Image (cartoon, rainbow, N blue to C red; front, top):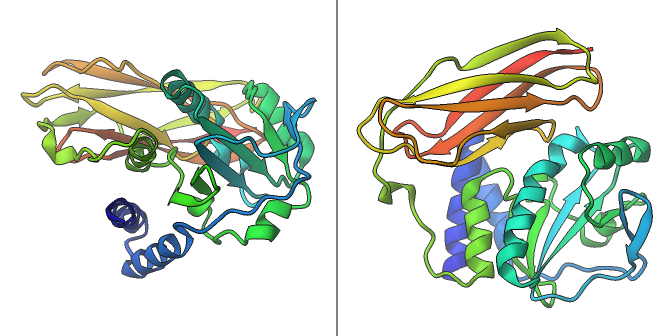
Length: 293
């Protein structure tokens, strides 16, 4: 129960930061309370494939924990899925969990061809259920808020936690704590804080061929007296990835964030890169924009 209450507080704080509406806090807390310990229902006819080709399995795997990721046809599927971030985290969990965690990706796509191209382009060689009829959602009636479409389940498919760990490191940390039975969620205030200067907050990439990758760099300078430690970097879109050194940055030294953007289709875009670190003003919200045509 303590973990549930702590989780509600973390997730409500996250949502209020983005929305600045107290009403959202109450709505999120109510949804989390409603869904925690409820059972996710599965039919028997789901087919999971790799890159839309080979059938991997037709039933829900049995494991100590499952992470269910549901994505509907609303908005940019690539942005919602964040496949590169999932691949990296899944690799981390698999390396330390002894295969006790299963990942279930259910996608209800607006355009199946676009989805398959996305999976192939990002080499997401992980079993995915392409739920053309949206049957999983019809069976369970998931919350309307897309931020609440990811669930940590126990072996009986009971909900232990809700929220997308790719959107916030605290939610990711909560999932890890539950899976590996840790009793304490570390708090940012336990870390020594430093000060950071950023060379630019927004970069316009201009107009370019949407089929080509576009890159740019942000420079963070540690102007404080303590080491600069980056906990996580989160992008608002799966089309955007960030490369950076994980080594703590000494005072008066720089950290370079290399941002790569690959469009799914021609579009004007405005993407956000959120940097979580031990700086006094963290998190930092950096932006890239442009016209992929």
